[in-house]
Length: 112
Image (cartoon, rainbow, N blue to C red; front, top):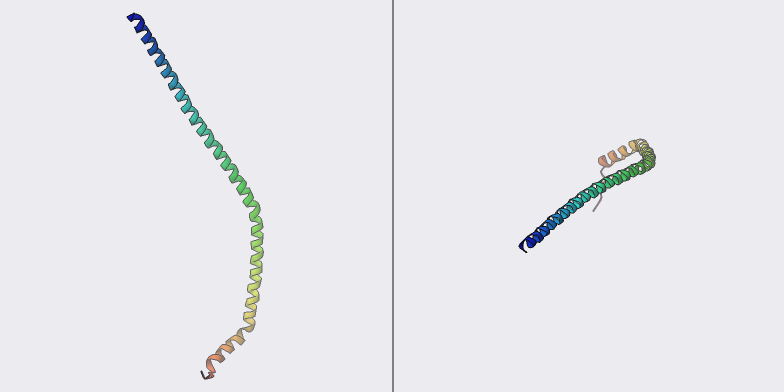
């Protein structure tokens, strides 16, 4: 009977070792699969990011042309207005200087 018990115990130990090996292989497989999934997800994210960056660059290129034209037009308009102001300054410069000198040199006392 002892031989049968010993053989039965040995069979159970062998089965436990086999089960342990199967569990270990399953863990290794799961770990490997998780790593693969993570790497695949990183790759997809990088591709998606690159795609969106390309879309943004195209969008920016299309819309910056309109901004450049508007900016140039605004600069031209500003230059025109500056020229008008300069011309007005040159035209009235002598009168302004004369009025300032008159105000400084001709004192008119006022009762307060």
